[in-house]
Length: 572
DNA sequence: CACGATACTTAGTAAAAGCAGC
DNA sequence: GCTGCTTTTACTAAGTATCGTG
Image (cartoon, rainbow, N blue to C red; front, side, top):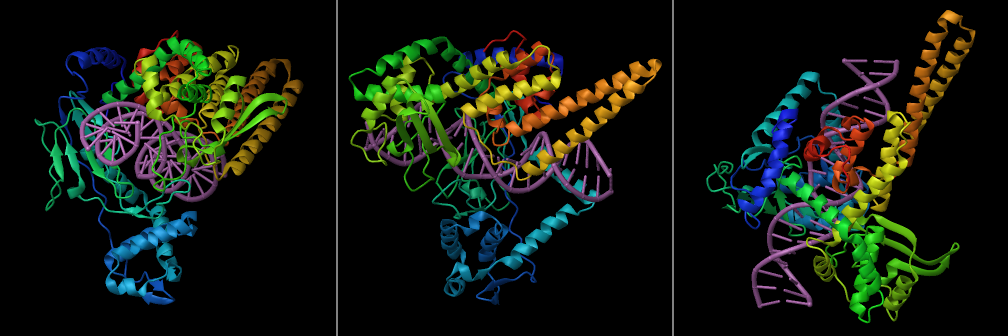
């Protein structure tokens, strides 16, 4: 721990390092060199499968059946998910059953021919009991587990990159299980196989101690590629994509990259007016491709849509971004609810989160959209002459380092800054100011369409809060009555008491408002990925808000560079 | 220019940890 | 100490972007 400075003096060192390191990058690390020295202990593998006790039974067609170890392991994956909606879905069941059968012995295969005849309930009960038992463990037992985890973290959770000891983000290899895709994923339920040392590529520097593979095993490969930041990689079997072990957000390499991202967004701020004028001009272009590009860019800018790369059909859930919008995803209303030229968006975006919005647009945009949609089927691409590669090439010409996603970062951060300016009331107390901060944050989350499922206990939790408020109100009324009837010499004390209760009441009411407004909105994604932390740091300094009220410990570690760097007058 | 491979960022959910009130 | 809730962390899927190749 403590590789990132927290004390004031070391912050200065860190600050200087950042400045220096960025210079070093140009001087010492030419084109794409990410480090000079990298040493780590390799990954932690998933624990081996432990067969079920003899008394835990699996039933097929009403009869007890003893499964082979391999088949049993895969069956437990399903049993553990039995209460989940996934296991009721046709695709999930089909994919699971197909992959499960591959793990069966030939006898099992010939017996088990229908998933609906499989009874996992006993297995499921066993796992529930296990979970319960874990909860009921004694303090000492829990402490022992905690210590074991800490030991693992200490041993495998850190690496040395150049002169820093850095925390690793995900040093544990993903355990085998059933793939849980989001939304309507065609591969849900498929078996995610166990990763072995023979699947693993180790990346470290030549002059480092190469981590030894587990006894009796070999790594797939050991390489020394200092043009990448990852320590370990493997290929997963569902999509065939590569997974990586990388450093924690608190690390130098991630922090610098993050800083750079916001600097790029700030450069966009300087030329965004020009770019906006440009795309407005392009709406009139005689080239269809240019018009489509200009309308798409307008959406990306105005609505903070994602770029929308093409995806392989049938391999993933059917989701889209800007460039991959289809005709069926928008409706054009020449007039709607007293507004002219309204575009109604309705599509599934990343993670199959629905984007629904009715947006009045400029007449030229509207006319262009009508043109793009002419003679097309609902399932045809809206921007048939455009893709993200074309768009990003164009953006690169407008500004070095500009890509579609920079608009999201820019618009998110500038919105936070504006909203903070607008909403912060200098006379408010700290809880009220924090409510304003959260509202500014919320404006961004809404812009970026960051949603969450309402917490399962939301209604109850609101009711609890309300009863707290009611109790506080009663308490206040009592205090005021006492104040009235108090003798002169006791008045001051009584008055102070009511004031204190009033403040507590106010705090509760603010909390209730905040929670209600936040029901289906997730603030953390924008806070962590889109909002230049220096804006928040400056706001805290300006209004005397402790930074701990805005960023928790992990967030403060991630944003250490910003906390150290930004002064009260920082402007994005 | 399409395409697949690669690397890295962004995302929501589930589990674990922390904590306030009894 | 226990309980029930809130907050934090862990997890890993799902995006963006770029590059080399034919």
